[in-house]
Length: 400
Image 1 (cartoon, helix red, strand yellow):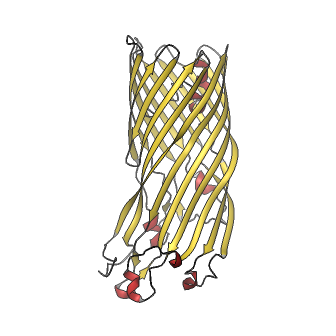
Image 2: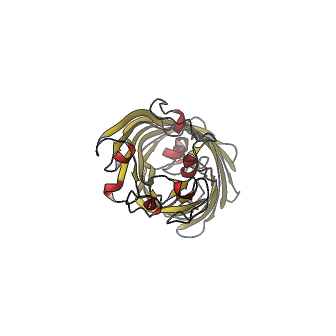
């Protein structure tokens, strides 16, 4: 994290088991590692306003265009745990990695279209997202020559995802209530739709590490994303009769489909100064976000009105080591580009879809870190800051 994620060609500690397993051969003694992280998310969403037309000035219909809100959610947990055992030209690692841990909550409060008092108001939605993927891996690396090593990992993924959307009507039916605030009363819920994943999968990660010279290293990796079964369900609510739906609690639609998470591949380079104090690392990663929509069954989940493009991440980081201090101290700085990967409406989509699924923007992350290396242990603190999420990490390594 302190390197801005530029770690593919460095891969010199236990997290290489995930980032680039070929780097495990650089570990000369058995070691265990533990890392905890705290994530603070700031997720934007469309709150209110005009999908089309001008506001009437009645009730909550006073916003020209669209205004947004932000979901603020904090999550903490053990993000990495591993055991590495080297033997001659081999190295083996067992690890647990928190691949994703995300929460968000959003709600609309008046989205309108049309003109004057005959305008249309869309239902106000409350959406809760809980998203967690944990991986367990067995990684191995082999040193082919003094300059080249190869690594491979077999990874077991466990995915748990819940996205629940509740659609509400204004508090009363008369026309003027069309412009009133929505109180999200339980009896005014029209329907609920949900997407759910509770599944597991196996995947592979491969990598190489090549020492080009005493100062330069090159690394590369391919990481296969998991595939899970996605289930969808729609249930009518107490006010569903307004839309011709059956009695509350009736299941009005169910669907299942395969789903996939992105595959990743990339290259990295590391330069180390002659005295060993300064190190600069650069990574390029290609993230195949399009897998998410492409793998869906079009008969059950129509994604024709959505688009999600693959993205390129660029990571740059540096470290300066105070070799004469006791313990040895390493200071790190990094920056990286996180490409926009929000599903967005296409040109052919309905106006309401454009309002609720606008394109995002590329995000710059800034990071810093500090490490303390003792004879048999190491402690590292890192932080990563961006407009969408701030992350803090504390890890410890013990060698024996």
